[in-house]
Length: 173
Image (cartoon, rainbow, N blue to C red; front, side):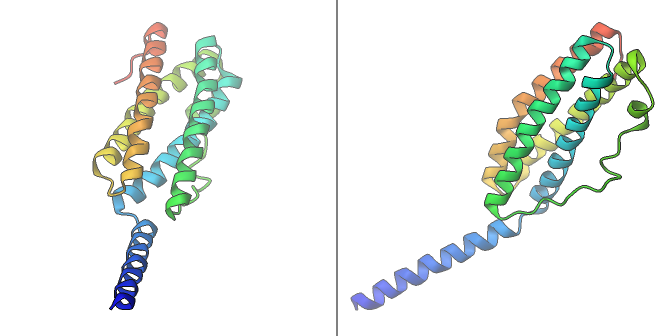
């Protein structure tokens, strides 16, 4: 009788592990979309921030660009580590998805600053929506937690770039 109980307990542990493994290797669509979009958005922020650090005229825009590189590199690293630990795959973005927008590539100085600031306001508004959706709707509690923990930084980025926009007289919807 005791051997049967041990055998049943072992089978229950194996079944539980298999079930957990199956759940982590096939994320829900909210989680899948979040992983892809958060990673892509972060990579774009890094690339744009590097460009701002080089091309911006305004010190505040240059500094903001450097902050984007630092913060989004850190956030993307955490995201990739989390995804890997859960058995999720984040698809690599295409070169077209990572292409520098013409409004940044073909401008410099004050025109670049205005375009970059406008783009950052809109991008951070959209990114916050993506993270809020994951926080509310992802089936994975660790993804929800990551989104929740990252949102304050994203909101601070938005507030900062909105302040820079106001100081520059840039109006963004």
